[in-house]
Amino acid sequence: HWGQPVIMIGASGAVSGLLGAAVPIMFAVPSTWGRRPSAPAELLTNRRALLFVLVFLAITVFSGASGWTGNSFMQDGGIAWEAHLGGFLAGLATFYLLAQRRVS
Image (cartoon, rainbow, N blue to C red; front, side, top):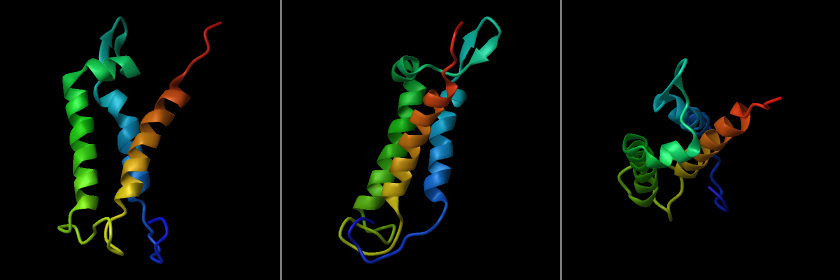
């Protein structure tokens, strides 16, 4: 929580990162040798993948914007929804950075 005197600790941001990194694998596409992780453009055209990502992002933002989780944008404490959002997006991006292979 940027600018607030509350220390947030936990592993939920890292767990969200693992979930983000799993998205291309969860929505793998058929290939000659079985299934391969979805490319970024394929995720954008896969309705199930888009729905999954949008629902996760909506729940994350809603949990930060509402008081039902014990946290809102103006309150101290509660859930570190920013860590969940950042972890998910970082995990998704990191998957593609680490999955790149050089073709020689």
